[in-house]
Length: 122
Image (cartoon, rainbow, N blue to C red; front, top):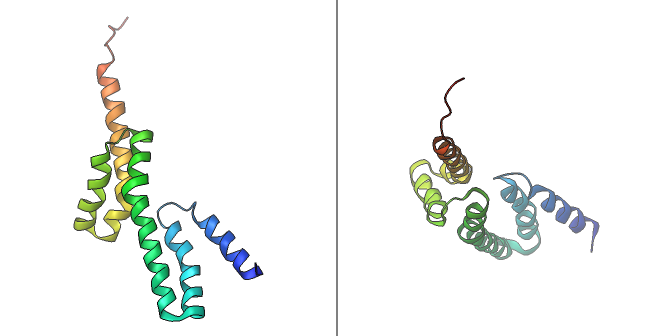
């Protein structure tokens, strides 16, 4: 493996940990390399592969993780990016998952506080 590929793979792996925009930043290296080395066809293939991976992540993995971590229903984690994306465009899709986690965490804390019995003051 050439030194450039090794650095590109390492950079892509590090960028995966940047929330929300890391995957797009990680795509830039392979997309530019495909455009330079293989022309327009390879560039399009890289973009198609990226779209498939992001779709699987967004419609399968993220809802399952959100359900497990923040107790967000699967229907909400699928519907929120679609609705917010239609209303706010790119920023709506980008902010949908963090907003859902905040809303459901706040809701859980509020119901836990409401179900706690009141103790009389001493």
